[in-house]
Length: 173
Image (cartoon, rainbow, N blue to C red; front, side, top):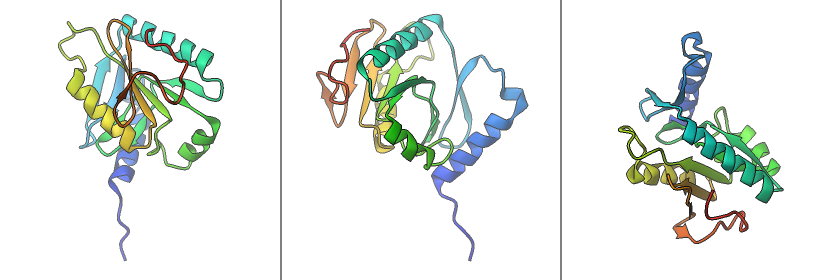
């Protein structure tokens, strides 16, 4: 009897092809895939990197039981997405390590940083909603969106005033 490859497995296989392709090793872009396995590139910007660094520093301060990581690949129903920053506990990391490469299980917290609004290819709120949905479906407990102004918006099943996972995390970075 033939084995059936799941959509997640197909996304993981495609990701491994991309990671192994020497011509893609030095791209100066954030790499993701869409639901068809096509490569989606986003250019890096200094302000985006500064925000990621600030978030990581704050996560180290407020999330003692876990660890932050930048640009973490995650297999979703719509391809491999790469949250700008994630926060994961050791226990979740063990579970994620068993969920393929890249994992189909999300870290507890996935963070997206909104790019400058004058960027013609910027992630708008529709895209943020789509990413929030994908991350939550993959098991994230919360998704945070950091606006251009540095405001942190916290989302679980719905938007909340503060993080339920890391209650002391500031509302502004």
